[in-house]
Image (cartoon, rainbow, N blue to C red; front, side, top):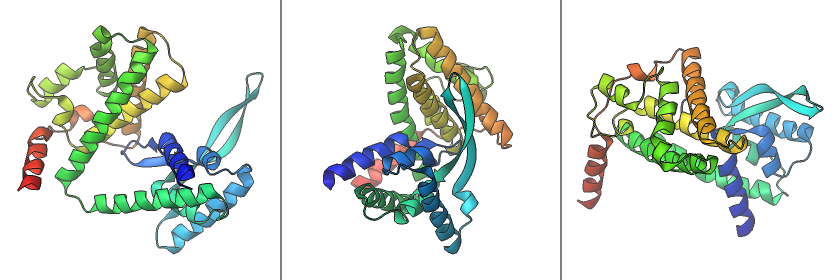
Length: 271
């Protein structure tokens, strides 16, 4: 059971994606595979029970279950449309709770999403400063993973700054990190992402994670192709912000350096 739990946990973490607001979600088709369901129609029934449970608990199911069509190849370059869902963490919890209890994968998923839901509830009680600290730590981790993907794609260490700046230029309407810091009044000595708020951190986390995923899924090879990919993903994230009527990141105000907050928190823990 422990081995299966570890495997399911690893797979669920692997297929987790982040929305433009930084919230995690799961692709229902990928979730179905991890939970060892073979028939989409059967899994749809599980999703429907979960949606009903969501409504009965007083929540709007449309906030957690987002239906979307996707195109899949069926051979010879032809494509067809099929149904899919974007499922929030809470939706996945309900899916696991309404799944086949005889499946060890379901039992493991129930444990995983129960823990994740508890962590989310705990995080919801955090202060704005604490949430910003947690998000900044996630962005740092995402950037480390992106560095690995860029290296695998062929980006040399001497060009990594150019690669990173391409992502910023895509997201920030053509301006690189130096110009962004100047616009926001951030010192050259400070890291840009140490001095921005949660909304801006979330936009950058989405840019970073989606670039890493695209580099790996598309098996991008070649330094310039990797740089162009980062630029393109940055532009797509910017477009998503525009479509929902959000504030463009270059217009968001700077925040006090996260380093000061981290030092303050560490001191509080020691005292």
